[in-house]
Image (cartoon, rainbow over all chains, first blue to last red; front, top):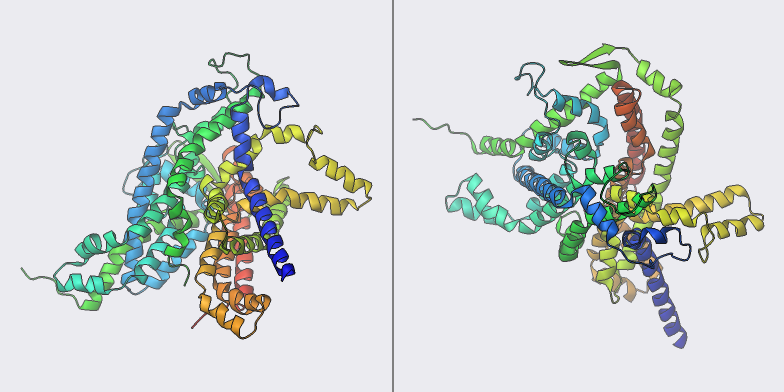
Length: 303
Length: 295
């Protein structure tokens, strides 16, 4: 009996150790960033300073703030991200509902294409897509040389609206599963009461799909926020946080710092800048983590 | 005015088509068409002219260039595909293990889940950048200030006269650990949801019949989780295929914008795509047979 108790305590200790260890590995880069972001440049070459700087400073944040043009870039990034995830949400809800409720000749094939769209990496179509948007002719409707949509929101908006943006296929899959799992009795009642198909969808089904809509929106928000590939491709040089970060490393000459700046100092600024970039998403996560973590159970992927 | 009357089934078909039309249009315009174009591009020399671009058909020249002339492609290709293929089983085993860990009852379970899922929120690209920006890491590897730094460990292993290959393997594995953990967020969630969907009564019944925990795992947990194993395999392959630390994708992107040109870049991505499609097909066929579906 005592042996059993001992074993149980041992198992608990092992579990605790594993959890703490894995958790530390995950948090390690973030903690490092924090340590570097508040570190005074003088401490960089002090070998006795490992985690906790001797002198705390706001300098790095101030420089990063100015280099990123933070308030403006933040507003832009939030704006673009909210716009894109709202459109992606609307599109995938409608498309997912269409797949869940009605069949037509070839609908299975089209749904297979949805799955295919998850698997095709965007790098495959990067070059043609870029050129098509650079010389956009709306399937030959606009005369040569076409419109240059690079640098505008249109490429991203069009892809979000048609359910072909980053990981949209996954969202269509999720919303379809969700609507399929919903009982049809609600819709039948609406039809009996004389509501049309569109009205039933917008007034009856959508309000009942709030949990899944929340999940799609949050994931879409986070993935759009972290996206570098499409923003780099379609919005080069835009005042967005993720694009600004990339330029911090390359800006060695900047007039704001009050110290003679060496190349290595920029790394501290870089760390502060990255924290400024992930902070909004971390705040979002802190408040809404429940939705992220319980998401898979609600998506109908399991059972 | 005569209203168009459709049969009920035709009406339903039309509605389905109407709702899914945005995707059909988008798929044709932004995936299928560029996809077809990329085949043509990979067989052509593409030059930008004021009114757009011009294509000169060059046959398989781009592929020949990629496979025989390009100094880096073959090496990076093999390395990437091997690393990716080796990482898939490790990610799956780890995420299954972590899901089992998080499925147990203990204090602070919610906190543990929040932390384990953090890599998904932070995004792979930015996590990678963070690691690269970690100047202390770089500094520490030169100095000996760490209590048990990696270099001391390496010295220890070398003095033990262990074979160099083995030491290299150990260090490779140590370096991979954070990457594996960070690539497992979604998979952990999927396995966790699967574990929670298994009815408790099954375990109770097995216990009553005298099954051990080991037996219960292999006869109940594993078969019931196996359909999601397939989902996770596919997700992991696709994910590592487009991962931020994928050296080959970087090579492809660099080739397009500042090197060998668009044609060569698309040829590279085609070779890569076919290789990954092969891996995907083989794993699905191998695993598909072993998956247990409830009917």
